[in-house]
Length: 238
Image (tube, rainbow, N blue to C red; front, top):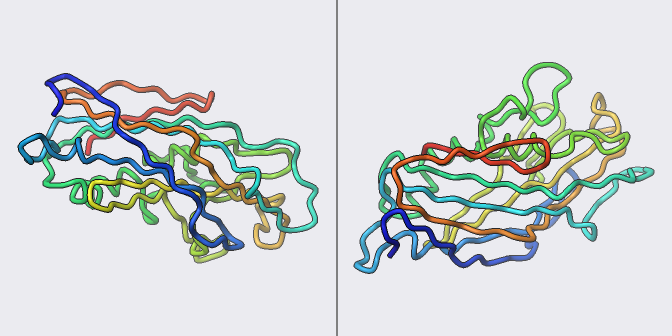
């Protein structure tokens, strides 16, 4: 167990691609965190108490081997930059398990759902850069343009759509015991956002090259920053 005010980095498990690709969106690699030592103390009691912090950091690179071009091209010379993300969840209440925490309405609303994340692209109105979920932060931090191509949407499965009714997919988080797995969406760039289904487009898949998780027993939130140098930090009250 951790001392009051202490912090410790826990094991990270990398997992390969394991979902079939669709033409609308594809699935990048997953990253898993074993939070067993976060979840309970030496006596087997929960450590997920109100006021505790759980921080995650991610370094995402695009996977050149998995890039897909649909149409005649040509491909843009530019590629997505390495993206560094971190998010700190400050527990506003206690939870009995990692599963209870991740499946809570509070966590899901912070992570982002199909109903509360903003559009990645909009000719008018709000976009992900106006949103406040972790998925919105991820989408807004991506290059919005690569040469003649515009970032139109992001997604994980074929459920992601670019024609009405629009279906958007957030960052996916699943739990197996005390292992939490994050999956970041693939990126779809189109050469004509006015006709996204009829134009050439690229799909870039993410490869998680580094990650860490830190647990802190503390009563206060840390102030993290967000900037356009592709380093993004958010603190969420959960």
